[in-house]
Structures are given as structure tokens and as C-alpha cells.
Amino acid sequence: MKKIRVALLCIMIVMALAACSREAQFLPVISETESIPAQAGTPAEYPVVPAVVYPVVTEAEPLITITHTIINQGDMPRVLQPPRDTSGRELVEYQYPTPEVQANIFFETTAPIRSSILAEGGTLYFGNEDNMFYALDISTGQVLWTFSTDEAVQTLPVLTDGKIIFNVGNSLYILNALTGEAIHTLVYPSNYNVRISQEDYAFNDSHVVVVDGIAYFAALNGDLVAVDIIRGEIVWSIEASLNGLVASGISYYNGMLYFIGFPGHLFGVDIQTRQISFETRIRNMAFNPMTIYDGKIYIGGRNFRFYCIDAQTGEVIWRSHSRTHATWFSGGSVIIGNNVFATTADERQIIAFDKDTGEFQRIYSVIEFGYTRPLRHGNNIVAVTTNTDAAFLAETEDTGLREAFAHRMTQISYAMAIDTVNHTKLWLAPIEDIVLSPPAIYQGVLYFGSDSGTIYSINLERP
Image (cartoon, rainbow, N blue to C red; front, top):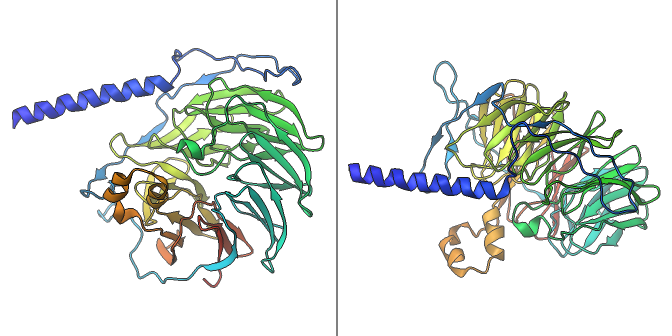
């Protein structure tokens, strides 16, 4: 027995050294006190942004570190051990019979839909893998117009000033929202052309944000690009210090742009000075949208941590972290009351934390992987989860892998509403399809796309 323990210890040490070696391949060798100068866009026709020295916030110990324990259920995914109240009762959702409802078919296309759904002004906007972008009349379900792009559309469109704006790879499209006619099409000269979905990191591209007539998006090499939406011209850009994909999207708050670059650095950019204000090395490959609320950024990713970060300074306020469990905070988060609710992949849960302290509050089962952002509807969470194993196995050419995981080949997704006050599921809608299209709520109706090319709808008032 002693020899077995020694052998196991040796194996663990070797694995730890290998993990450190792998991390070293992706993380830059920079001292904890060294600052990195910002770099301007290199093309000669772009205005040169003078380089400055900005603070690099290292991932020092945050104010609060919450550590979770796990339970291991054999071949089942490892899950967080639920927190308990003072009487020892587990703080999980209450198990009552959940009524099943049916998702309705709203519209059908001929290719998978993995873009986010945008519903505004009575129109539903989305793109699909057949390089088509659609505008539908929500009241009738009829096509208002379509637009053909050069690549699959896997991002979140933005509606502003009568224009629909979205990025596809290194291209930015600016369309007339009423007619679908192209106003401007711009291609950024990136030295990298591999999409995020091709890297198997995530299913949705980084998204654009528009502020005061300027559209900001991330090129595939990680450069931040600013485009005047009236003239259709690049006005400035910031070159990425490390080439790599940005999948967290570009977010805006109080004069600042935020995005997470490769391999897990959170950048804050002042849009007035066009300079990087801070860079926080969370070392967390985040491929889901961040939530910004009351001066705080909430984000999680592939290093099994969920962070609360000061939006002005980049300082880590708290983080939730377990060095022993393996899950991704995969689909984003939503804030309701005093809690932030974050979706996970492997554990197939929504986890509630106190938004101010990071205290672990409660666990909600979502049955399958949470790869799309949860939404708020009153005091309820509306979420759509899916069996991404089936999506992967359907695309792989490894027959041995397909045979070994044949039990996970079923295409199944679940839409659901969770009452955060009474901690119960209000309803559950099984869908025999793969859903990797971030949903939208419009006038009390939930809309989301699927890999069958279908747009589904569920009336949240009368599901």
C-alpha cells in the first residue's frame, strides 16, 4: 500500500510539472512589477496613438477567496459541494415537480444558427452558418430582408441610428436596418484568419460595441479596432501585445472599453485618450460575455475561477476558486438582487454568489452545458443549455471516440425558468436540437436559434 501511495505521489508531481510547462508556453515572462507600454495600430494610414506606460495589475491575493469542495460521482461530472445553512441544510434548488412546456417553431433556415439573437423595434435579427444574415418581422414571422456575408455569422449584432452593425471574422458590416442594404463593409488587415469556433475554444465570435458613432471590435489577431460608422473608416486601433483571439466581446462602461485578450488578460481602454488604462492578468481564457454592474466587472472562464474586478482600476475585488474541481464558467452571468448567477459547463449548473462579497449562495441544476448567457426576466433566470458533446461528436472523424461516447450522441437542449426567490424551476422545455445561439427576450417571449437552423420561441408569460 505504501508503494502504491508513493507511486501515485510521483505521478501527481509529474502531472503538476507538465501543467506548469504548458502554462509557461502561453504566459509571457514578465516580472510582477513590470509595466507594458501600449502599442498603436501599425498600418500607416491609421492615426498613430502615442505609447504610454500603464499599470499591469497582477493577480495578487484578492480581498476574499472563496474555496469550494467537491464530490466525485464516479463517471459522472464532478460537482461543487453545495453550501449549507446554519442547520446543515444544503442550499440547492428545492426539488418540486417541474412542468414541461413545448418550444414553438418561429422560423426555419437551412443552416445552423450560432449567432446571438437581437430583438428590437419589432424585428428579429440573426445570422447563420450559411453566410446569411436575416431580419424577421416578429409579429408575422415573415422575412423582411436578407444579406449575404463572406463567412458564417457567429456574433451579436447591434442596432443603432437606423443601422445594423456586426463583425464576421476580420470584417465589419454596417447595414441599413430597414432595407438590409450595405452602407459600409470594412476588412481589417489582420495577420490571423482563424475563427474562434475553428479553435474549439467557443462557439460565438467576439461582438462589437458602438459608442458615440464609433464601432469597436476585435480583429482575429486580438487588435482593438475603432471604426467611424458614418464614414466607414478605421479611425484608430491598438495592436495586441500577444496575438490571440478575443471571445469575451467588447464591453463599454463609463468611458471605458473592456475586453479579455489572449491568454487571459483583462484590458481597460480609455476611449478619450485611446490608451490602455490597465491590464489585469487574470490568466483566465474567457470565452463568454462579461457583466458590468455598479462599477464592477464579473467574468469567469476556463481556469475554474469567477472574478469580481473594479472597473476603474482593474483590481481584483474577489474571486471564487477551487483548485480541485474542474469546470468552466462558460456562458456568462446575470445579476438579480444581491446575487450574481454564473453558468458552468462540466458541472451543468448555475452558481449564485453574493455580488459584493463573493460568498457562495446556492446551486441550480441546468441539466446540460451552459454555453449561452442566462437572461433576467423579473426575479427569474431564463437559461438555455445544451449537450455540446453531441455537437462535437457529430463533427469529429474519430470513430473510436464516437463509439466510446455513443451515449452522449443524443441532440438535446433545455430551456428553463428558475425562480430565484423560491429557488425552484418554474418550467422546463426539452428540445431535440443543439442550441448554441445566445437567446433574447422581447415583449415577454424568449427567442433562440439552433443547429437545425430553427428559431424557437417560448411565451414566458404563458409557457
